[in-house]
Image (cartoon, rainbow, N blue to C red; front, side, top):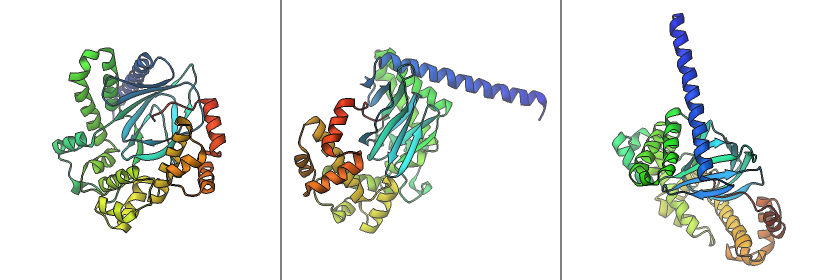
Length: 322
């Protein structure tokens, strides 16, 4: 390699790094304009949410919906079962299943707030794109993939995200241009390292899609007995295959998933509806008040009454996740 060629390559890399830095700064400025204070901001772009956080606080527990999350500033840690996923402005997060997780902003100050984009996606859009791209089920691995993954942000993906958020400055452009830009973002994701997780969710005969059916049933019936036979029937899987693929996708068993749903909903009732612990536990399916309190404390770090008091004192972090 000649010295001129090497110099040219170094210059190209430096230009690329500079362009990414400029795009990220533009993204941060756009988010600040449309999220002028700490909180969660639902925008006029369909399924696009902006999130701004000024401080590090206690973990927030919720069911994360299928979405892609990108940061312009700050960093966050997400816990799924016993697994940790950390992302920052250099990495993005893709969630392809409804997953009970806990999330904690780990880098944020009033001067340098945590700034996040959360874009939910539609599996029908993915399926349509895949058809045009010629992606077929035969090219994907057969087992269910983990429903959460991180990957490095690419200049092309970052550019598309900036253009999407920038549409908020010109609302008249949102209706004609946002669907095209979202489609481009999904295309970039399908072409990237997270593509197979998204593709599996969109294919109706894939293990991940079948797990998603079982999850949908469980989310609607979490307060009743765990009916694995019924879940397997909904997913068109045997009970043993359901257990295997469910654990692969969610990092937990169906019973553990149900427990997470019950406890998170009970916590919502305690805080939002001001129910007492015994009533909340009973409404989500617990027959034993003592068992409910033990499992609640194990998950949230304090018994129900103390946890609710702590939450109200600190007011918690904004949700939904991003």
